Image (cartoon, rainbow, N blue to C red; front, side):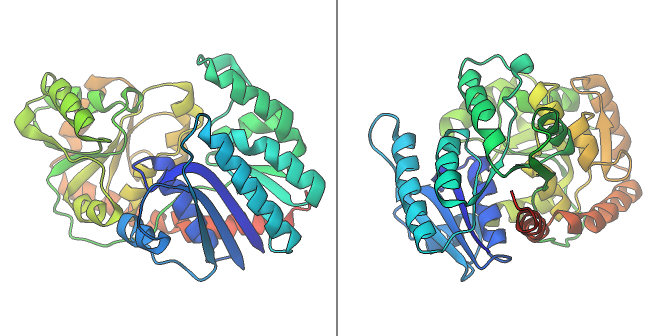
Length: 378
């Protein structure tokens, strides 16, 4: 099977979508005959150097990287999509392509043309849900809605990250091939359980709930040290440091900034308990599949997460960590006090997480995707 995977993100960048798309394409290349990975160039390094230096990956022979130059004019994404579309046509004419996957709604119109003119299978890997805007408020969402409603009924299928998300799509497109393929662990790393920090990995955007963690730490009796691995740039780090310092003792937390995979893997063993303190939003309740969850699993790190449907799919309460009512700082503080120094309990949960981590390997996800799209005639 020959697959094209299209994403409009800048490559490399701190965006989780860039990590996600890179890891997906890399893993698919271990299962397919060829994988053509389309991305927007954002470095003077060669694709192999970007894979090594930013993602700690070696390029498998089946992975062909098309790092298309970033446009310098208005609406450059459309120019990028047009360039990708022309390259895909050439691959189809050469009989070098069986399936096209994208995670970008704006590329869906090109999907229809490719499917209609060349009969190629087309799959949309959704990271949101715009078909029904009952829970969406942004003006931009209406453009995505129009694209989903017009083009999703015409493509082969949809790849979801969570069953909660899959059910939303099935309600509207019951005749499409819709399946769940979870992310995403590169490798499982055994380490001595000696971390001193409560840790958080990821975006510092407000809906991620980092302030809830800080408020709970301030209320706790143990007053733990916090390691916050995130921050897009120096300006955001400075701004958040000032903001968080008004909530919790600045001497008891540090913000590292974005880390490449090698640096992240060196930092994760310092974390005793990992946090996923999501706010109760539509996206977090039904759509999110935080990459930090799988980073924690890879290192056997016990987790404390908001009790939302998406998190219940990934974490069994008291087995892989602990769930608390989203936004309930008092409950979160009580969990911190209860488990922070309970080493036997933490070690038992850590063992459970190492055992569960196997099912979340990127390679397992790639196996599932290739099996699903290979067996579907859509």
